[in-house]
Length: 219
Image (cartoon, rainbow, N blue to C red; front, side):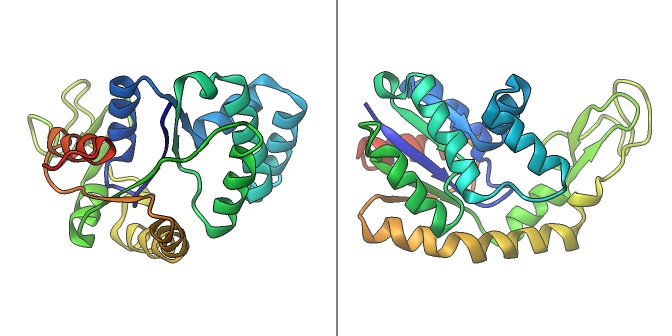
């Protein structure tokens, strides 16, 4: 059984790599955002507490996120499959919460996989995204451009850039991420769990590095 946490900045491709790791290693993949949405949709007592916080416009606390993660790990078969956490922990406080979750559940953390990429590459990946306001099709000026620049292939509408993909917003998101994640990285490095991966290149190239690092194979 393998226990992983996946770390990395916005735009580095964590979601893609998490799906590939899940399929390759047969792990239970828990994305923090997804399990929060599941808890709310289930209307369980815990989900109702999460929904109330979200409805109030406040951020879900570390402790409440920890409860949701704890419940998901216990209910979804992590003990038999192994687990991959994507989006948790994000702060040093959440590192401690995860420690308290894993021990009584009989689970261990084997690797903290950190995927990194240069700042300018991350900014380019995030600011290059475009969306069709008509049919919601997604494009990227580099990775998935439309046939005609600025025009949706599916419905012909003019593509737009979302407000949260503008450079000043992206730069601030990356700044906040760095501020929060630095002590998390230090904690896992000190424990000898950190696996640092170059996130440049294609998704296939990055996955090869991730898998080799987890398996202890040089590439």
